[in-house]
Image (tube, rainbow, N blue to C red; front, side, top):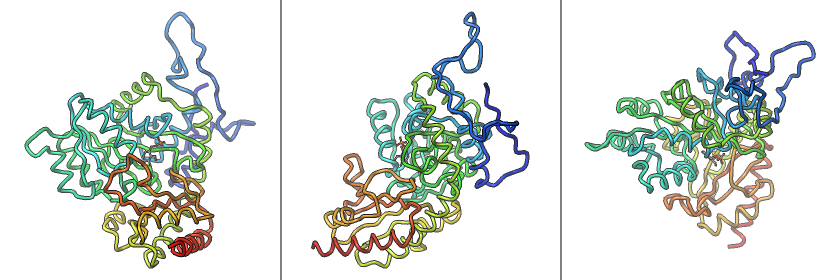
Length: 392
Ligand code: PLP
């Protein structure tokens, strides 16, 4: 049984694609949703290696509709590849750096990807140059090598996790292309509905599907999308040989979650903007980091390359780390937890993680705005600020 995407000859908008992509072909009594296929192997002749699927580590029919949908959403010419987690996808992407090569990466990349790169660099697999990704001159110097070795890969994350710096994606892709570097962009924070890195010049887009795409905090999954068949083949080979494959149920759940992506993104982005504007005026907050605020250093760039500003915002709490902790403890509607992109609003103090760079302020709280009523979210914050202040 080979998955055949339902054909949509007409160009559909992304909020229709999330609903329409990855459906089984229509036929009388055919199911509306693709089935979950639980099989570790597939019948072949047993005498020669034949068939496309062969074994469950190479492929599974449940992956196909999700990969088709994610590829379409990112505007890739090919289906995406899903992995067991966002970091498994990052590991596959980093494997494309040649031995002894150079990787340029934001100082405030998602800390898991940064630690992976640091550990691989420490083993001598490649040289790592970390940069302020919002500073074009600094990134270009790192790419060209300033007389030394030019970069082999540019890793972009925009806005960054958690400092929400905005990279000039199009300009940096051109500079990376000029030195022959591959460009990988982690698009987890924005989703393909808000930002299209392949259109801006990236070669590969990475997602922690765990977050917005699946959207319900019940799945760990990753994905890579590219239009380049050679790169896709290399990434597929990495997945098959290293074995970081998605479970069929996770793939099915992620596609189920994807159906409501447009509604969830629309709602959470609108709420994030309202909350950022109000928090910016609140005495309990020293600084709001959110590219949607005109005062934010990334605002102009974000406006130019994003369709909205995402729904993650960070606040630095007046009174320091202890007051920040007291705010988190006093919240009732917001859930104190790491991760982001689910229907429920999450909050955490990022520096509690040992690997978070010291340049992330100790009083910084990261807020992942969900789809609850915005006034309930606001009232909970205001009450928590008051309670934390009363604790002194
Ligand atoms: N990229 C970003 C921006 C993330 O926030 C995360 C996880 O928090 C990842 C990648 C890693 O994804 P996963 O947890 O699915 O491995």
